[in-house]
Amino acid sequence: MRKRIEINSKIIEIVKGDITEQLDIEAIVNSANSELSPGAGVSGAIHKKAGPQLYEYAKKLAPIKVSEAVITPAFNLPNKYIIHALGPRYGIDKPENMLLKKTYQNCIKVAEENRIKSIAFPSISTGIFGYPIKEASIIAINTVIEEISKISIELVRFVLFSEEDYEVYEGVVAQKDRALPS
Ligand code: ADP
Image 1 (cartoon, rainbow, N blue to C red):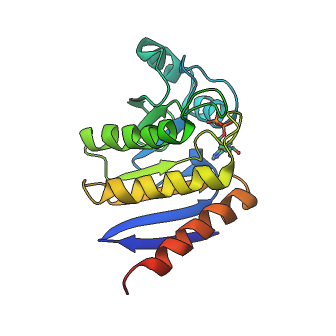
Image 2 (cartoon, rainbow, N blue to C red; image 1 turned 120 degrees about the vertical axis):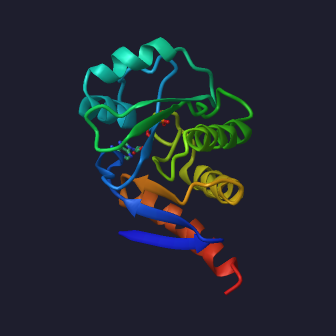
């Protein structure tokens, strides 16, 4: 399952899959915890495949605050970098919408500082952190569209783990696509 749109020569893709299996992407984003420790969900999967060197390296950069992003090598993963970002916990870290937007902005800023051309995001905050998927997907996609026009990233991919989450993101992107001048 895959959808791709082009906006001002930049590609935005929505795929159903696993963030740890994005072979052609330079930097993957980890939906991290403040300590940058393995934990569960996306972070657990990334640390497991990257290997124990990842936490050895990352813990020196911890703790991070809500919406912050830091970069590490990807170790045993097929990518060059991992950008670790801490999204807001829904109902706890407020205002959630601004903090989620800032999280995506900070990831893109770190990517740009490292001259990264392709980046893959999971759906930040919509797992253990409880952010409703539709609201989160609108923020994720709008923020990426706003930011990438200003910078040199060429490809942004959203990797959704479940078919339901994929459908929600796909719906939001399809709506954007229809609104574009042809
Ligand atoms: P958060 O704490 O930010 O909510 P989670 O890791 O709990 O982060 O989940 C974020 C989203 O990522 C959820 O929708 C979850 O289903 C999804 N997810 C879990 N594992 C993976 C994976 N390996 N690749 C991509 N997405 C994943």
